[in-house]
Length: 169
Image 1: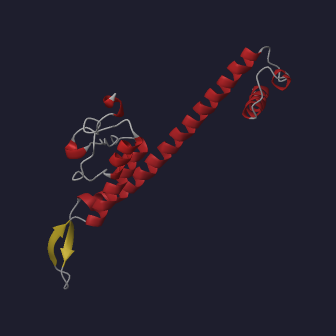
Image 2 (image 1 turned 120 degrees about the vertical axis):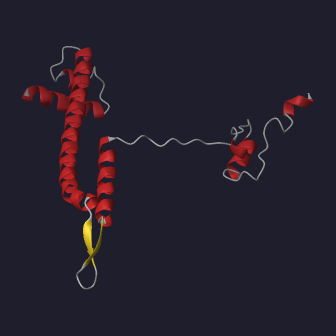
Image 3 (image 1 turned 45 degrees about the vertical axis):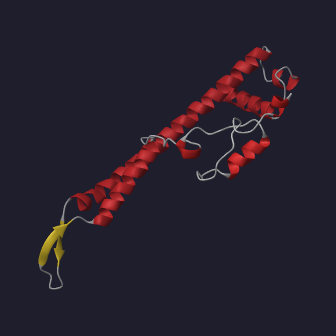
């Protein structure tokens, strides 16, 4: 296993330098053919990807455990009303600790981001009055569109509004 790992390390280093598979430096690593070297490079890259994914998974698990501990500490203060005292120390009511509520919400948001739970935000570009974006064939039309982006009060000339240079022939 150590020999394979070392050979793959050398192979990757040579390929990063741009050395071709049929070069003697690669073939001297012990490959029977250029195809064998290619396949071994692919295996090396897949192994590195799998190891990286495993490390990311371990990191994500550790972060989730930290978030669990913090959430466990903040949850009671965020969900159970505490007595509100006046200047004399008398109980005048009960309310939630809003700082704890905010902390819980931030922890939940962090967990959602860490685990990819939030849906990506959709965005859509639109033209004047929410319609289609008019695209022209000339640089002048595109420059005009760019200059009026975000300003629906400025009319953007479209190809239909401008005569074609070819229409006069």
